[in-house]
Length: 209
Image (cartoon, rainbow, N blue to C red; front, side, top):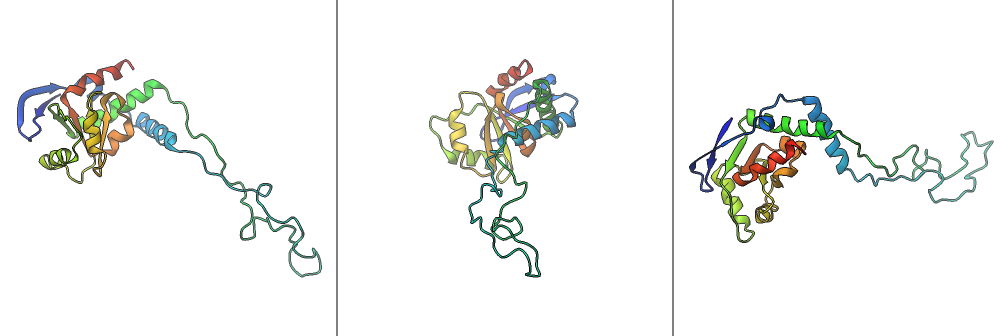
């Protein structure tokens, strides 16, 4: 598949990029995508939640009332889970939600997500953008030029394009990643991929990664 390369001002250049068939034209595997997205979201969880059980909650240990003759049920502790402010039964405790996922499955999932975007014609290729200093206004104008304001947009850059990241981080619904660090979740979560021309060699690294 070939894509035209656009200039920053929105006009077409004379250059054309040929997408690697092994990355952007694979048979999508939905199960691999599901596993990789689940893996990504699980790794985002801090797992620091904690609840107090009867042995850890603070409170008096004396009997609340005499146990018999009241006409009601016995109540032996103010920490009883049935009482307001009482303990939690089988509540969550700190744990690690991450799990191992085969590298080949992760690679297949990424390529499947990129292939979906290529198939849906949601990939835009731009000429290299050289920013001497971070400037949010430049990126806002870029989004306006391609009618991407308010659209979930994922910019894929090479390692040297730090100023593009700094210029984009305050723009809602816009995100910047290095091409070699692209993940299945962010690709599928974005409505539009914007790939800078000089970042395509970074994709080749993923083939043997």
